[in-house]
Amino acid sequence: MDFKQLAYFVRVAELGSFTRASTALDIAQPALSRQVRLLEVELRQTLLMRNGRGVTLTEAGKVLLEHSRGVLHQMERLREELSRVQGSLAGRVAIGLPPTLSKILTVPITREFKASMPDATLSISEGLSKTMLDSLLSGRLDIALLYNALPSPDIDLLPLVEEELMLVQRLGDADAGKPVKLRDIGKHALIIPSRPNALRMHVETELINIGVQPKIAMEVDGVGAILDLVADGAGKAILSSNAVTTAAHPKRYSTRPIIDPGLRPKLFIAINSRRPATGTQQAMLQLLEKVAREILGDS
Image 1 (cartoon, rainbow, N blue to C red):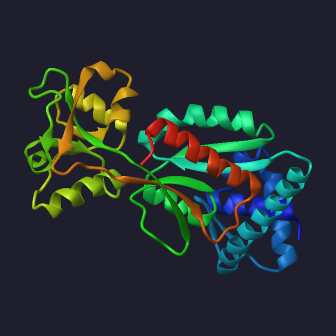
Image 2 (tube, rainbow, N blue to C red; image 1 turned 120 degrees about the vertical axis):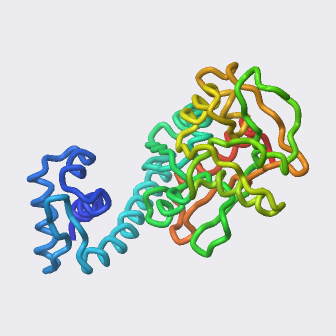
């Protein structure tokens, strides 16, 4: 069985389209189709059902996809281990970051990565905790930063920090900088991400635990858009101070600490416990922990 054909098949299956896969792999679509077809002929199985919208997996295709990821991962691990014998870390590592942290962590992480692992390739993507958890389980991500992750036999979690959330309002609003009690948050019209955003779920859970119903003025997915609406007077937001300080115009806002109690969601580094980490991934794990603690503060 040709490993390149396996890799092509996995990419087509994950993207659900020969067109998208050919672009991602930088290979002509007819050549890609031919390679996947040769794999089907060798296995004597139809792996993909072609239709006008793309492709879907047959039952045989689903079985092959599950096993192919593991096989390709082990091949990548072997390449990396051989590179390590030669004194270098190589291969590809994919990490996922929450949108609220991506802006402040991407540049320092990339800088450190290039300095310590010049022969390796780094992929960074943004996503909600639920989406990134699914990507960890499927093998699309190697490492992710997740808020309020729950213990699971499939995921190993390393506690990183607790981030303090603040009430964010436009500059000039009353009580700027003055602490606000958690029970009084229900009095404020909030602009907040839609479920299942982890920070949204944390805010709602903590409020409901003390018998307070949040007042949702608007559901908006995107920190930049939320802050623009706050500056326009559409409502207030609950975000970390990092989200405000890295905004395009941070001086348009004031923040108020939330007390009695505070809102402090826990941030974890997560990896797939079912997949042995390569040397490059282990080095990336240590690098990510170091950079995140330096920038976000130790828990």
